[in-house]
Each structure stands twice: as C-alpha cells, then as structure tokens.
Length: 135
Image (cartoon, rainbow, N blue to C red; front, top):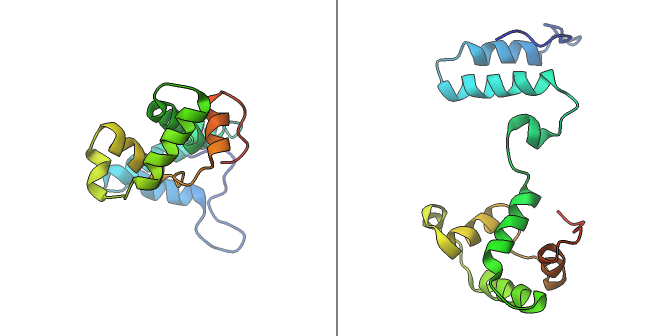
C-alpha cells in the first residue's frame, strides 16, 4: 500500500501518526486489519468524499428510511406510521433476531441503529418522502 501523500511520518509531539498506523495495518497478519488499512488509505486519497461513501457503508439515516418503508405495509401514511409504531413498541430485541429475516430482522436493525423510538410524525415524513431532519 502506498503511503498517503502529504502525511508526515512523525507527529510534532512524537506520537504515532496515521501514516505509521496504516503501514502497521498493511503488515498485519490479520486479514481484517489489512482490509481496514486498505479502506483508510483509499478514503484518505479522496478527502472531499462523505465518510459513508469513502468507506463504502450505508448511512444509518438511509438504512433507517429503507427499513421503515419495508415495515410500512399498505394504507394511508397515518395508518402505516401507526402500524410501525405498534410493531416497534411490542418488539423486544433478541440477539438471534439479527440472522432472522422478515419483520423481526428489520426491527433488530432499527434497534441496532437506535431508531426504535421515532415519533409517528417523523415516520410519516419519512414514508411520505419529505426531508426528515432528525438522524
């Protein structure tokens, strides 16, 4: 892995810097560490990109919105939002739910990103395609 351009090897205070850490990751025996180092190096090549884009991850807001749309079902926005709220209030998280598909799997994902306690109004805004300002 090439060292990111513009990163000094030693910080002013003598601490380990990012370029040195990337080099250590590249030389690691752990394939996950090597992959992390590769992703960091790629992200540093394009500092103008958003974090989620740079690391190839889906932002939690986009994931939350997608999950809510999958849980919504049919009917008016008010009915869809009410249905989602009822499901979320009844749901009790269990680690096994992360591998279960369907509704329980979707509710587990909402729980993991901290979005089980949304208001009915916010859910309606998300389902209606309006800009929802809360993360």
